[in-house]
Image 1: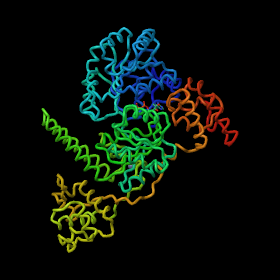
Image 2: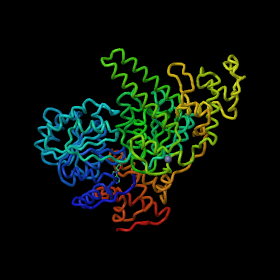
Image 3: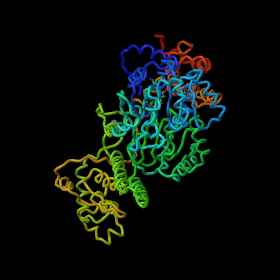
Length: 635
Ligand code: ADP
Ligand code: ZN
C-alpha cells in the first residue's frame, strides 16, 4: 500500500495535505482517500470499500480537523474505539469515546465538554447512538457527519451480521441534516447494495478500492508436519508479530504448547477463555509484550496492531472471505508481511462435517427450512471456492482479486509461492492425470481416495490383497511417488473436476462426464507437483523495505518506543509505527528539522518524542558510526 496517488490539488487539496502532515506526519494520500475525504468535506453521503489496512479511518478523522467540526464515528467494538481514541489523542486530535462502561459522572462531564466544543471526534456504539436522549443531544451539537465503521455488520449477507447495527437504518430520520459515511472491507456487491439501502444513503459517492494487498506474500503449503512447519514460520520473523490461526480451541493450546517447548513465548486465545484472560492476551499483544498468538477466529476485530509480520493458517479457513480478512491483519502498516496457509484435505472434511452437523441441528427447530438449506448450500459453496484456491496453481494475488470481482493487472505478482517459483507444476501432469483416472476406472469406481492412492503406489495392503488389486495393470503405476503425494494428486483431480467424489460418510471416487476427454488425451491439464519442502525466496518487496536499514539501530529505536509506550500506558504503535522507525533507521535524521521529514512524524509527536529518538540516534552514532541525515534533504 505504499503506492502514491497523483491528485489534483483542488480547493481543499492544500488544506488536506497541510492537516495530513501536521497531525499524521504523512505526505500523501492513498488511493481513494482523497475522493472519500472530498465527499466528506462536501457533506455528501458516501460508501467506501477498502480492504483492511487500506486507510479507511483517516477518511473520517481528517475532515473533522479540516472543518473544526464535531463528527461522530460508529464502531461495533469498544476495544476498537479505545485504541482509536488513544492514537488520536496522542497525535493531538481531541477525541472521546462515549460508551456503556462509563459512570454517570463521567458521562455528564463528557456531555459538558462536548457542548463546550472540546472534541472533534466522538466515538459511539450503535446502542449508544440510538439511546433515547442521544439523537436530540447530537442535534443540539450540530454534528456535521456520522461515519459508520464496519458497515457490513448491517447486512445479513455479510459474514458478520449484527442485529444492533440493523437499528442504524433509523439514523437518517433521526439526524436528517447529517451526512453519512459508511466504511467496510467487505466487497461483495450484494452487501454493498444492502448497506446503501439500509442506511438510505442519498446520491452517495461509492468508492471501491483494490482488493489486492501487494505488500503481502502469500504461500500455500501442504500440511505435513504441522508443529515443525509452524515453528519454522515463527522463526522466520524473529521479534516480529505473528498470528497463528487454528480451527479448534484444543489446536490453539497444543500449538502454543509446542512453540513454548521450543523456547518461543506464545499465548493462545479462544472463546473458551474467560473475558479477563482474553482481554489480557489481546492487550499484551497490542502493547507488544508478546509477539506470537495462536488463536481461533475469535481473535479478530479487536486487535489493532499494524506491524503483524506474518499470519499463519494452521488449517484452511471456511471461505475466501475469511481468508482475506484473517490474512488482512498482516502488514497493515504497508510493510512486507507474509501469509502462510498449511493446507490439508482433512480441513475440507472437517468443515463439511461441521456445517452438516449444525445444519441438521438447526433443521430440528427451524421455522424456515428452505432458507436454512439455502444458507447451508452457500456455505458448502464458499468452502469449495476456498479449497480450489488452496489447491490451484494460479497466482494467489490474482486468484484473490478475481474472486472479489476485480481484474488483476499484472502477469506475475512477484509475491506469492506460484510466481516466486516455489511451487512446481508437474511436467507430465496430463499423463499422470490419465494414469490416475484409468486406475479409478479399473477399481470400478467403488473405492475411496486412499485405496486408489495405495493401488497407484503399488502398496501391499490387506484390502489390495483381498480385492486382488495387485494384479491390476495400474498397480504401481506411480510407484516413484509417496502415498501422500499420490493422494494429493487425486484430490487435485477432484478439485479440478476430472473426478467426482461421492458425498456421505464413505466417499467414493468415480469417473464423471469430463473424465473421458482426459482419458482419451483430448485435453491438457496442469497439476501442482506435490510439495517436498522447497526452499523459499524473498520477495522484492520484503527486501526493499529493509534496504539500507540498520537492523541494530531499528531494534534500539524499537526498545525506546516500548519504554515510552509503557510509560504512557499505551500500545507502541501509538508512539510510532514500524514504518516510521524503519525510515529513521534508514535516514538517521540528526535534527528536529530532518526528523520531521520522516513519514509518520507529525508536529505533536515531533515535540513529544522527537528529542528522545534523536538522542537515541546520537548514542547509536557515537558507538557505531555510519553517518546522519542520509539521503534526507528538506524539500
Ligand atoms: P483500515 O481502517 O482501512 O483497516 P487504517 O485506517 O487502520 O486501515 O490504516 C492502516 C494503516 O495505514 C495505519 O497504520 C495508518 O496510520 C496508515 N495510513 C493510513 N493512511 C495513510 C497515508 N495516507 N499515508 C501513510 N500511512 C497511512
Ligand atoms: Zn503471484
